Image (cartoon, rainbow, N blue to C red; front, side, top):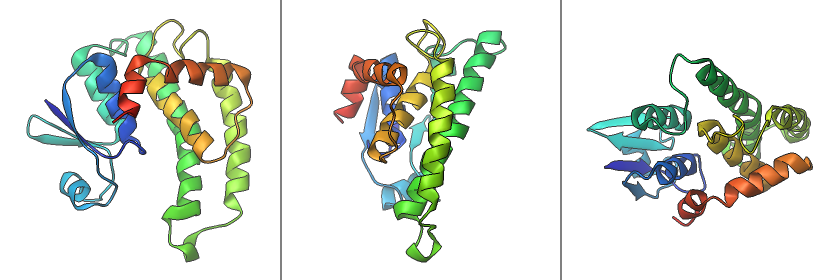
Length: 194
């Protein structure tokens, strides 16, 4: 049994969604970052963390990759061209969407007020708009990898939802339809209900 540490309004959602998609049993410790429980799992207090077989894994993308590889689901086999393309898309989303959104969040409410740069969000929004155009161009089917739903879709959808909450507008009709279809997946709805 897996134990997911982290609240639904964080990157822990990615792990919950993944476990719902692959049908694996888990317990959910719904805690905020830097809580006592989060620090017990990860000394930095960052979430998510995943406890499995007496070990604790951290970082949502590392956890998703571990689960996909372990269960042979939502991924292409390691060493294949398809896996390299999937990994490329995953890293593009992490670098060009997740990192931009995380920087905006840090300068909005995470960093101490005297360390925040007030004008950075406008620049980050411009960068985000440029980057989602590239993501839209990568969408070749119902999923980023064409007809196959992968962990890249989980991370991309999480970032698109995060952008909405961060007031980074998305006007690309193709991406809006994609995000809506992803939110309509049964596993997404089950994870969101946690």
